[in-house]
Length: 152
Image (cartoon, rainbow, N blue to C red):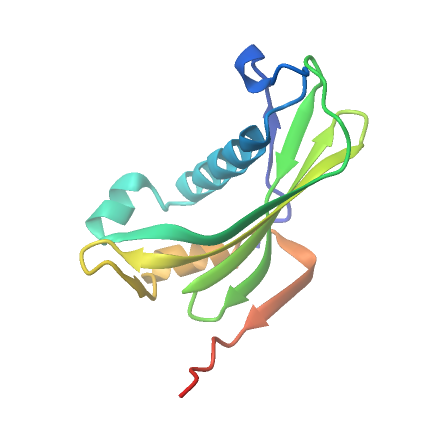
């Protein structure tokens, strides 16, 4: 298992709103880029997903804003798996965005799954994608999920 995955982030002038605050959508873009970079670094590339007709989809993405970020702040964001179904079909991530002074500025929560891009239905991913998620850094409150029970 990987103990830590994080990246340094760079704010652009275009990331700011008229109040000189970071636009809310920028936080989500940072999280999405970090996840794609992690997937790619550990073998779940765009080519591999296309070959296996799979792709990640999100059910929920939520940001909690804690402290202001100013243009010029040095930032970094981490990736933690908080919940994972044993077959890898469903996953949850938490991203924490920190300033270089150690202040946690935002927390993102993401719940997702895998889709079969040919059938347009949720699916269980191939082993290489499940193994990538299983080896990801885990949060202290990580839990295994056994799946949803169907109502009937």
